[in-house]
Image (cartoon, rainbow, N blue to C red):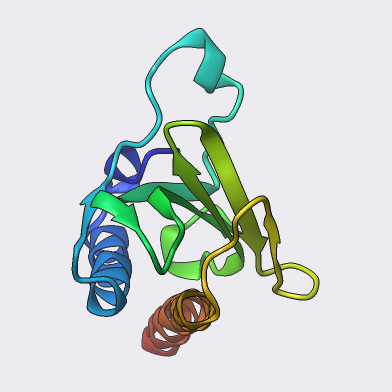
Length: 148
């Protein structure tokens, strides 16, 4: 689900903003898109209420990332309250005008695959961002449980 639509509480808006800042700290030439999915019958089948989807676009093709844009899907647990939701996985995919060029998922071996994966330096940065996303949601979950 588009990150813009998931922003229904201060806590989730803060988490989304933190993810944007994490990404932009590693790739300062990117811009965030909180609504990467168009609202139509084609994309409705991908609408997952337990994910936060955002994209990062580069003004020109990123040599490091080997793409013009990166779609990020943060998969959340199916807990009812956002305070107790945790990240169960992060998926990334790099795209250009020809379509999808590479994919990455935090499930399994955390490896990149595809036609033109990012350069090793960018792969490491993207893995670090994913680790930080897990930490961000884990810390927020622990602090909200502690407050109860």
